[in-house]
Image (spheres, rainbow, N blue to C red):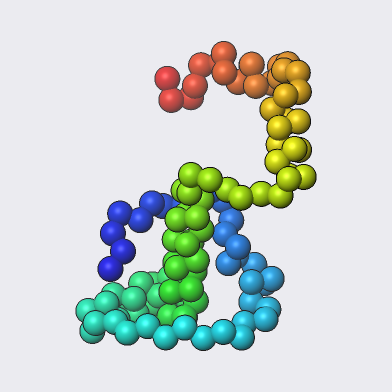
Length: 108
């Protein structure tokens, strides 16, 4: 059973939208305990989605989180050079960002 799974705060998942529905040809089978099945059934019911969609969405988000937490990201030489060029460019003034950071927060 998954524990301490961080809530997704990075926006939309690749499982969101119609594009993720096209081309589903693979099958995954999973054995679960009766308690796990009951939990998953109830969660999918209150989420108003099928059990399959609930499990697929949750598992995909967790997989994305695990991969995003890696310490290294292999990229092509071209992508790496583009990244370095962005890091090496001169600092640009961001007046709107400066204003945002100097104004009192609504939480203060």
